[in-house]
Image (tube, rainbow, N blue to C red; front, side):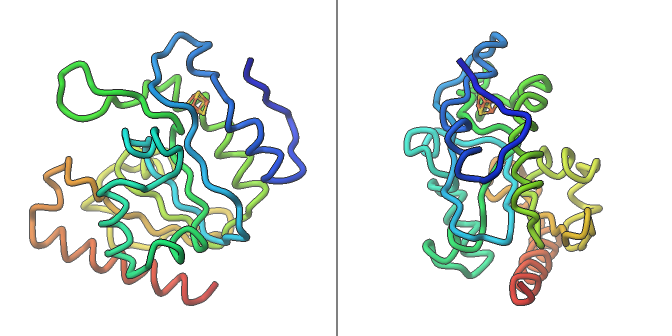
Length: 200
Ligand code: SF4
């Protein structure tokens, strides 16, 4: 049975409950993994992805597959450094399985996104990150209310005292990155993230 407290004193206690969360299953949705999470190691930056993929679901750690490698290459961070720098979260935390169309993974339903926002809200209260990096249209829309990559990639925003620098999703599933102009915007956005990291 999913346990959610109205108040958490620490990220460690929040993660104890998050690790076994089954709220979406209890609401009738099909998931193919337990929640993916990473330990809190004093990170001051928050990476906010969309939903775990199959590799992440199996390992129960974020950004383990090819998209994670691309993301680290954009940010010029080695694996260890990446996980020490970013507390990695996502709109939903469990692998949702393949889409019924057979193309890519299922997009979590709005209700699943709502259920999982409980964890994001508590994490942001506890972590108070100085930098938030939403990755991909779904995460950008939930955080900034805009999902137009062309409008927001390469720009810096402020949210409750934190810098917010959006990135496109590095999975290659979207054709957005095929355009040289969009790849240039992505390089600008990655440079902005590195600049913000230099200030932490
Ligand atoms: S997606 Fe989020 S809310 Fe749903 S079961 Fe997984 S951790 Fe819980």
